[in-house]
Amino acid sequence: MQIQLLTRTDPERVLINVKNVSGDTMTTGFGVALAVGNEDVAASADGVNAVLFTASAELRPSFAGVAKGDIADNGYGLVIAWGFADSIALSQEANVTVGLLAGASLLQAGAQAGTFTSGIAPEAISTYMGKYIVNATTQSTNGGINYTKGLVRCL
Picture 1: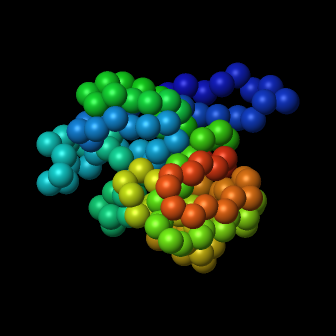
Picture 2: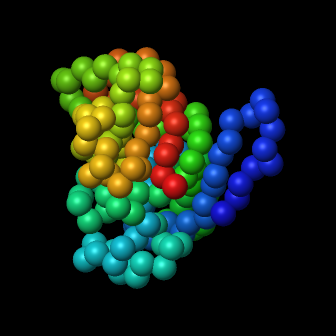
């Protein structure tokens, strides 16, 4: 775990190190979950092995954060577990316009593994074990993968 030195002018950020065992590259801004030994991943829950975050009930509690940079398959990389993320991948939803408002949209797992959408209601946060992302910019997307900025809260 890497915790930056506290300064008044820089936002606090906590990074964790993970090993990508998802079978594909984890792209910058994609959601990451610790591998919990499900049938899709031949990995045990060791706190290092990680997969792309999805909406499955099994992975929801193990949401670890957002990839800070690209992480090759079987490679190691950093994940933002707490703090501001400059790049958060939004779900590709063909023919659907997704409107995100700064500070008003809480993000949850999207249709494509590793991406996020704005469907979570504030009163549903308890089902996410307090782990979520607050959107920090106003966005409007229509198809394709777009990116936003936000506050990651996974600790």
